[in-house]
Image 1 (cartoon, rainbow, N blue to C red):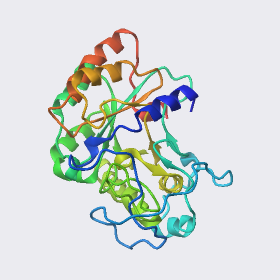
Image 2 (cartoon, helix red, strand yellow):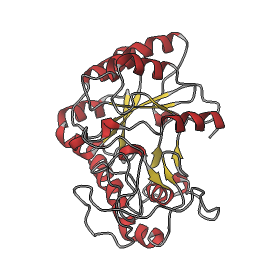
Image 3 (tube, helix red, strand yellow):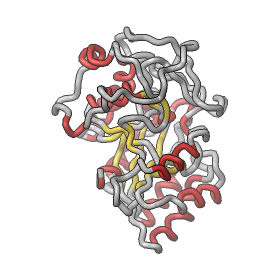
Length: 310
């Protein structure tokens, strides 16, 4: 990532992705919250839980353990037992929004931009922002939609309509919407996965659901809160998915007013991945995006789904 893009990303790191958490959750920076575990439970957890942990290692990835290229992975995703055996003894060296294995911008030289919208479900909100989707359709603007398993269960008809629309592609936003950590790190008051097995459950559970509904596996994954450690991103790659981060936080977790959303989206540079939320109708996201898109189109900006260029 270029220095300017990294500065832009880190500038929004302090803003809580509130559209993907309970309104009662804290808005402060991420902090450790669950005990380390290299022997996770055999079944996926239904809700986040846990207590304090120690801080992780310094934020520099070991040169000997780079994140694998998903394109080079075997045709069949790894099993739970395989990933636990492969990564269970590894300690992460990075934690946050921009770690090894996370895509935070489109390929170098790409002049288009990608709009991405998360639907979190559960306490973070299972609403459906029809105004946002209608605005994208009215202008023929494609987008990548990251859907959580709980949101899908709460909105089966809307899911079916979105999945059938070629303007959109569906990404994996996790099973119960947790930060992806092998040591229980938390973000914005949401406890993360506590071991390699729980990382697998969070990614693979919703991937299996989406594969059954779509007829093909999702290509991209974004965790609840978009936080990861560098071991967890390797697990995602072994499951045949690519981790999608972002360059520009378009709605600050569905908390910005429409004028602020318009400003953030309209000022996104070429090659940007913009994150927003589609599970909080009635906020500033839909009118803000609707106000920004015509000017960008008039200026010649193209919009793409992630799979169109990645």
